[in-house]
Image (tube, rainbow, N blue to C red; front, side, top):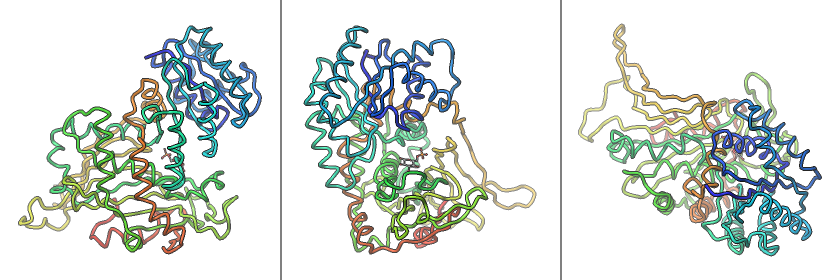
Length: 483
Ligand code: BG6
C-alpha cells in the first residue's frame, strides 16, 4: 500500500463523524493503513489542528464499533490536520495546496493524493474544477476521487456531472461510493455461487421461480426533508442501492473473476434489464407514502406532517417494482424490488424462491409444502439460510426448517471500512462505475417522469405496516407473495 495524503471535504459533517473517522481508525487498528499517511480535514468553520483532532477522538468514542485503545491513539490522531475551506474561494485552494505540500515534505510522502467529497451535491463539480485549476490534483503521484451519492438527480444531470468530473479525473480515478456495495453480505454474493458448486446448478431460470430484493427501514425522513422531499425513495434508494443489489444478485460467475470482469458483467446485466415503458409503469411499479402510525409502539406522524415537508407533497417514501433481466440466465424470472421508510421492521435481504417442480411434468407437491428459499440477510442481521420442508414426526405435518449461517454484525467490518480499504489500495470492484450509473438512471428515467407528471397512484400506508397493499398485489398477480 502506497503512502499518501487523504483529503476529506466535509470533515465536520455527519458522515465523517459517524462513518469515516471510525472506518479509518478501525483500518489503523488492523494495520490496513499506509505506513505514512497525512489526513487533511476540510470544513467551512474554523478549528485549530488540535481542536479537530479532539473532534475526531470524540467521534470515535461515540461511533466506533470497537472501544478506543490507549496504545496508538495519539499516533493515529497526529495524522490529522485541519484547513478551513470555502469551495468558491481561490484562497482556500491555495491554503489547502500549501498544507498538503508541507505535510508531504514533513512526512517524506510521495505526491499520491486521495480526495474524498462528502459535500452537498452542488459542490461536487465546483470542488473538482477547483482542484484542477489550482494544480492540487496535478501532482507527480497518482490521484483518486471518491464521490458520495447522489450522482445527479436524473439522467441528464448525471451525464453533465460525469462530464464535468472527467475534466479533472479520468474514469479509473473516480470511485463512486454506494455503501450497499460495502456491506459484507453483498460482497459475499459473488462468492456464494463460484465457491459453492452446489448452488451453480440451482441459480438459473430452470430452478428459480422469482427473486425478491427488500431494503426497508423503520426510520422516516428524519432531519433530511430538504433533500428527501426532492429525491424520494426512487432517487434515494432505487437508482443506486436497489439496482446495485439487482446487479450483484444477477452476477453469474462460475469462477473467481477480476474486478474488470465483474464490472463488465454488471454493465451487461443493466443492458439486459428490460425497459419499463411509460404505458406499463402503472402495472409494474407501486409508489407509496407513509401515513401516521406506530413504530415500536410509539405513535409517529405521517410524511406530510414531518418538519420541512410540504403538506401537499406527493413524494414517494415507498417503491416496489417488477423487473426482468432478458439474458440466458434470468430469462422469464421476475425480480421484485421494494424499499420503504417507516416500515414496521428494518430489513435488507435478498430472497431467491425456487420452483416447486423440477420438471414441468412433475406432479405438483402435496398441500402444505412451501417453496424452498435461499435467503441472504444483509442488514441488520448478516447471514444466509436455506428454507427446506421437514415433516413433524408427531403430527406428520410439513413444517419449514432452516439451514442457517449467521454472523454477528458487531464483529464484522463496516461497509465504509471495506470500501475505504479498497479505494486506498486502488481496487474499484465494489464501486459503481459510470456505465452502471448511467444505465441505472436510464432505466428509471421514464418512472421518474411518470412520478413527476403524477400519472401514477400514490398509495398511503400506515407507519409501522409492511407497505401499501398494492405492493402485495403486484406479486399476487403472478401467484407469488413477499417473503
Ligand atoms: C442512504 C439513504 O443512502 O441509505 C438513507 O440516503 C437510508 O435514506 C440509508 O436511510 C439506508 O442505509 P442502511 O445502511 O441503513 O440500510
